[in-house]
Length: 329
Image 1: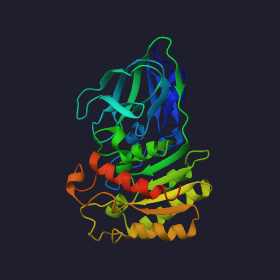
Image 2 (image 1 turned 45 degrees about the horizontal axis):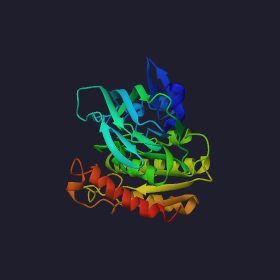
Image 3 (image 1 turned 135 degrees about the vertical axis):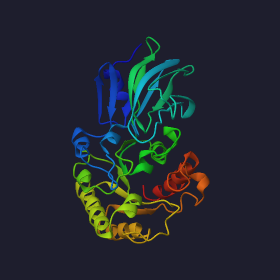
Image 4 (image 1 turned 120 degrees about the vertical axis):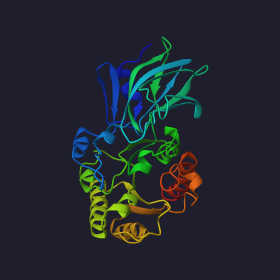
């Protein structure tokens, strides 16, 4: 039984649009209006950001089925500076395998999996670094398939670390782990290289959300002035608080980076957290979490030795964050 786009759409989490184009099912984590906002936006160093809006970061399929087998074929288009094309497959909360390759010249991948007997929950994580579209998704003929209802709904904002850089497995990023722990449907709006962008907050997704996490700051500290940082960070938080007054908003102050003792145009690395704390006194639905100590200050936990956590580093990040979030939810 090859699933149609009408059958795939209700089992999709983390996408605002699920559309069939040229025989493949495509997933969009940004609205069209949000994507258009990035058409001319670049990083402070001049690199374009629009292509990264197409990445399937945070997108997954989640469903209950009686099918004993699953076969899937996808096509991937790079949508970041990394060729990370791995997809993870879980059954009843346990990983049973992956398909796709990282650092590969290939763009088409497939996988076949034995899901086991009886009714079970299935979760397929899509790559954070690519635009992955389904060419075919096949279950056993006559198998039942039921969407999984989540307990929470959330928005996730941030830069490359929240986007997923540089997780080997998409299920390993701190954002994916957080989404799973919260039993949430999360819409990941993170973009590698991004700084505070108030215009994005102005067109945040419509509807009610249980929580919003925001993890900008490390690129701001590296590239902009104190005046620009203070202005854009303040505008971003005030806008989201106004648009979502009944939603818990968490400011995630940046994790350790090797050069954190440098004094930049923003000032000390601690200035970000201090700015967020001032805003929290003004905005009743804003809580600040200091993430600096979560990942050990040891290069073995960073894929590039200095800034982006590897899978082990992401585990530390998630564990620290999860312990703090539970105090406020």
